[in-house]
Image (tube, rainbow, N blue to C red):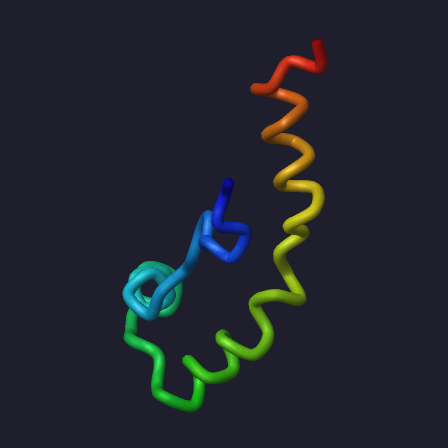
Amino acid sequence: MNNTSKIIYSINIEDAQNVAEQELGRKLSKKELKLIEDKIGDYIDWYEAINMVMQNNISNH
């Protein structure tokens, strides 16, 4: 039986800081990291991401 609570993909602080350094030229503050934490889910279409992986990689037969 599968563990249904297992995390499939995650984004960590290092990921966010790497993007900030590349895009902003600096690291994010604690306040900015909290904003990312609170809002990032609003920008990720997880349903469509899962659906696209299935369509491109899993046979329906």
